[in-house]
Image (cartoon, rainbow, N blue to C red; front, side, top):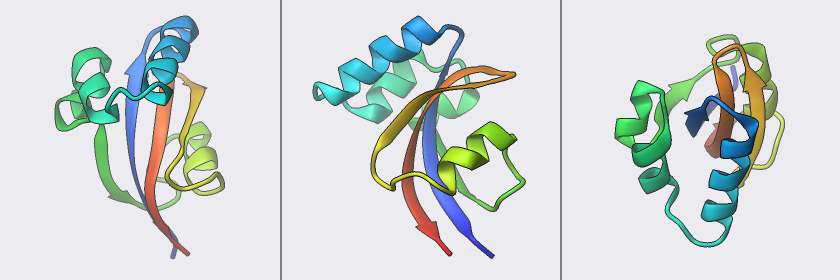
Length: 93
């Protein structure tokens, strides 16, 4: 079964999410931005979510993590929790 490793930043607005993505694209460290801004408890670990399989995360999250490019920051991705920036750090098929 496929597995993935990812980290994310969760915020309440699309606008904030887009600003943080721009900061990361301009050289800010993803983990530092997560620690400072993410409202998810994982933010304290730099947004790291560990390894997981399809179905363990909400469908919008799975759609990105199991289909989009590894090593790139994706988002904003809207879920019931808010807006996410997602960095896929690894994936196995």
